Amino acid sequence: MKTSLIILTTLAAMTGGASGLSAKKEPTPVRAVGEPVNCVSLNRIRSTDVIDDSTIDFKMAGGKTYRNSLPYSCPGLKFEDRFSYKTSISQLCSVDIIRVLNNYGGHLSEGAGCGLGKFQPVEKITATN
Image 1 (cartoon, rainbow, N blue to C red):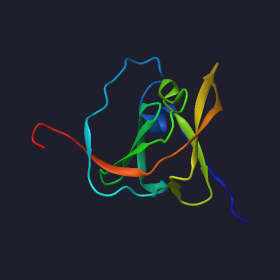
Image 2: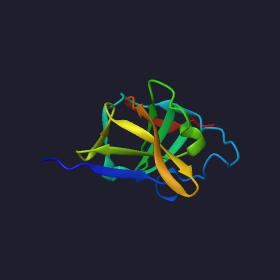
Image 3: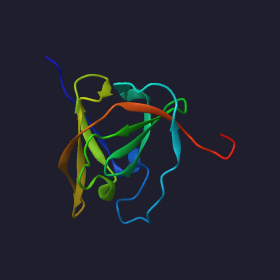
Image 4: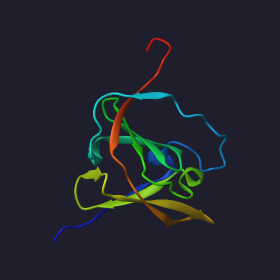
């Protein structure tokens, strides 16, 4: 019998930002580098950056970043700036569902469920690129 792992990407641990009350930040311009992949290893994810309601950057060990463009907008994702996911394997895949974590009076509860897309390796665009 497989046991489900529940990974909560909490405010301090994974998103690296405050909830939707923080100042709006512009996403770092990026370009695709290589082919998209279906899955990323959970133990290699170091942080996440919620760009908007349909885009999440997964920053990996070793400095690689994967951008996940969700096929549909995920209500409240950017505002809450955190999400959870459940998986029975050691990878997060394009077939998995994330859940927005809503903060109600200091208590987190799962909100909207949204499907992930493929993980596209990206790199920052700098003046020298």
